[in-house]
Amino acid sequence: MRLRPAPGQALGAEVTGFELENASADDLKTLRAGIYEHQLLLLKEQHLDPAGFIALGKALGTIETYYEPMYHHPEHPEIFVSGSKPGENFKGVPQTGKFWHADYSFMPNPFGITMTYPQIVPTTRRGTYYLDMAKAFADLPESLRNTLRGTKVEHSARRYVKIRPSDVYKPMHEVLADIERTTPAVYHPTVFRHPVTGVEVLYVSEAASFGFVDRNGVRLPGEILQEVLERTGQLDPECRDPRIHLQTFVKGDLLIWDNRVLVHRALHNPAPEPAQSYRVTVHDDEPFFGVEDGNA
Image (cartoon, rainbow, N blue to C red; front, top):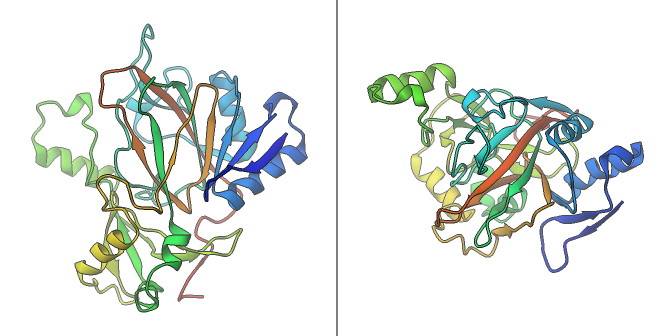
């Protein structure tokens, strides 16, 4: 197995020669360390069936099955399915993740590692945008960093909703009530130190963040969240901010990233071309938030 920084890119590393069935304990240790060092790994020439993909997730930690069954692979609920594959008798949910987010940030216990395994890659536009929120925090003005340390940020799933079949013809107030009942808002540290690397991470996303509260639970002005999103590049509609990394992929590629540090956003092909990806999400052996800055 060989792991090397992606040539010409500030973010990510490429892994070649990795075969799960032949991977040693040292290989898996190197893979885990690479996730934290490089934030994003692109494993080349993978040939895993669904059970093998799940086995890779279990080799990295404990798999979290997504709470909404409509995303589940019919035979392997641990796999979240985005898109559909011609000839299959089940349909994944199309066009997922078209907004900046960290997976599961709106839940009480987010996970540390996300893996996606494209099954059908369109011939034209397809990829995922990433932003390094440790670097984004370091680039903020010192006064704003000091304002954010020690605060908490509200996360909720209520901004972007995938309508379920059972929601058709249901009054919107009932749909919203279901969201609040199933995924009530949670408050996470706005800034924390990564439990492995020790860097300060800004845990804020355009999709799920709804404002900051101070140590006493008092809501900070909404303009602060707007400024943070603007300064971190998440309000750029064309994703041309120089800090944004676009990771493309080909058939056989498997992406693994540090879900603590990176927020991401899918790049979808607007043309009606088949596309499908599998996703497995993993709790690693570390506390998610490490040490909350300002409260240590």
